[in-house]
Amino acid sequence: MAGGPKRQAGESAVPSLSEGQLAGFRREVWDFYREHGRKLPWRHTDDPYRVLLSELMLQQTQVARVIPKYGAWLERFPDLASLAEAPLPDLLALWNGLGYNRRAIYLQKACKEVQSRYGGVFPRTEAELRTLPGIGPYTAGAVCAFAFKQPAVFVETNIRAVFILSFFSDSAGRVDDKEILPLVEQTLDRQNPREWYYALMDLGAELKRTVGNPSRRSRQYTRQSRFEGSFRQARGAILRQLTRHKAARLKEIAESEGIELARIEAAANKLVQEEIIQADGSLFRIRED
Image (tube, rainbow, N blue to C red; front, top):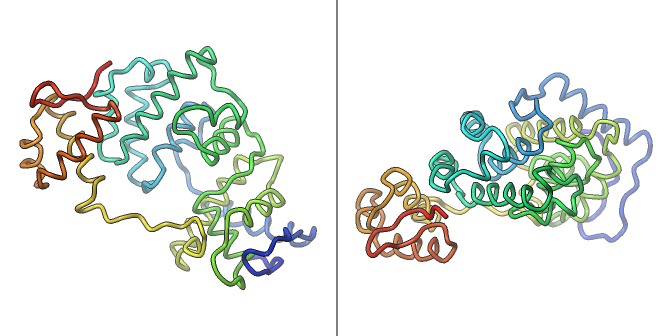
């Protein structure tokens, strides 16, 4: 990777790259992308709905698992309006297998707000996008870059890997995103931010595969919790059974999924509080209103 200013993590001064360092870094990133760039379905659209869908699906989920789900989703919900009007059980059934079902719910809520507040047209600024449910700084920046070709500044795990390996290889301790973002801004190709970020992401994914994950040295890095025996597993089991059978008793879900009843009950109580499922006596079902 291209060399750059080396400094200790946590120093307050923002490093300034020379023209030579900028050119060298950009050349390496673009050269890699020209040779090894990934051909992914969501890279062939600038529709903000489809861009947002891909970003939410990709959160904490491998690309290979997302590709078939992305295509199936768009066959059923090809645009913002079709998703906004869909019954919740339908979209959760289609999301099944991706995990973190709240992402699907946030997506629908965001689409409903775009309809009601913006006349069905996605806002084009990061500030406005961040007011929508489930959209944080990274997702807002990604929609601006990938849908609207704006030079937004943001960082995610693969981008983080590239910058840590390139500019913080000699740093002691963990590197904060606050230290990385000024470098992201300095190196950003403002004429072509969309493909520049694709290039960074693809290079970061390759680095993780070949040299380990430099992002482990980030202060923002957290290891994903074990799925087996987790609260996530119980939530997913409940929603999977309710999308298959419309309604079920918690004991039946526990027996079908092989999960202890107490954990299923705790997860069900939380889902009721979040207004994702409802109880009709001893039967539970996904809310449809």
